Amino acid sequence: MKQSSRREYCSTQKKSLEIHGRQTSLNIEPGFWSALQKIAAAHNIRASDLIAAIQSERLVDNLSAAVRLFVFEHYRKEVDGEDNFATSIIRRACKGNARFKQNEKEHAVPSR
Image (tube, rainbow, N blue to C red):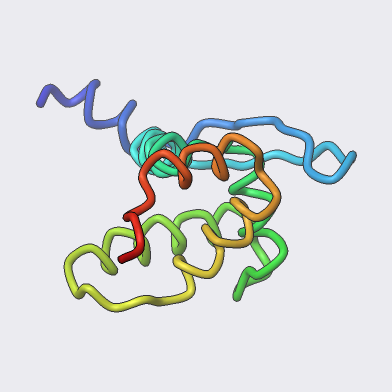
């Protein structure tokens, strides 16, 4: 990776969004933003809904840091195989989401 590419990948970018009717922003590295979007897409929810859930349950004062911790914990769960706070945040973000409910129905295992 070239020096300029490394710098662009590691430097934070400002992302502006609205959560619960209030404007806010994140300063986050492109890799974390991309991972967050992939996690949201995998659960058929918007990244902003996921960030709102992260904000509601965050363990640190800084929202950008909370998003980084969430992404880390999400991927750590995949390695460890154990539920953690990232799992509860995803459940909270998905709750009441019509697209998620439809996706859940389509992939449900039939009962015996």
